[in-house]
Amino acid sequence: MMSIIIPVLNEQHGIFNLLELLNDRANDPNALEFIVVDGGSIDNTIKEVNRFSKKFPELDVKAVESEKGRGVQLHNGALAASHDLFYFLHADSHPPKGFDSHIYKAVASGEPAGCFRMRFRSWHWWLIIIGWFSRFSWKASRGGDQSQYITRELYHLIGGYDTTVPIYEDYLLINKLYEIDTYHVIQKWLTTSARRYEEVGVYKLQWFYITIYWKKRHGASIDEIYEYYLKWCGVPQESVERVTK
Image (cartoon, rainbow, N blue to C red):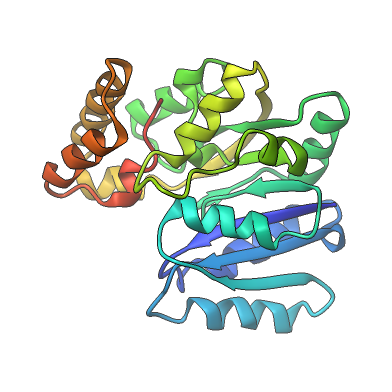
């Protein structure tokens, strides 16, 4: 059994379809807990979650209110979870068919944390290359858009998501897992939206990612990276949170 934790903010146009997709692609949706953690949406996101719950009353669906901030929302979702296996999923990422069985199999084989490989829903040549490299186990190939499964025990052992940082929470969690040599890439395709690249520009956003990657490698603090983000005109915070590590 597994708890799927989805942080959202103003996702009224996509959350119902995502929940339907998860229900359709899971081999056993009745063994899942769907937790949507809202960071203060001002649209109809929660109404859409409730509409899904009414359409599928046999499913375990929760809407959790939280402070805004992906790290806080993810952690609050973990605190609200009933099951001993967590699956953190961004609202614009779609896991593969049978994703639940793939995760159960990985955990049963001794892999308590990991992700899927990823490709963007775009035919831009650079985004295709980024997706191709996600199959490798290198830390530099990781990103929050690939989703994150982790057992409850391991999540709390490493301290979970850092709720004090404004950005970079995915990297900080992933880095803890790599430090203890515990990370597995399930070789099935997850797809994710390219909307941030489309909003900002593929090359401009990629250059931004490269810059903050090197800043972090050379000792920059989270506050310094956040300050750089604030000066980077036109880059949405959600884009910063998907830094290629």
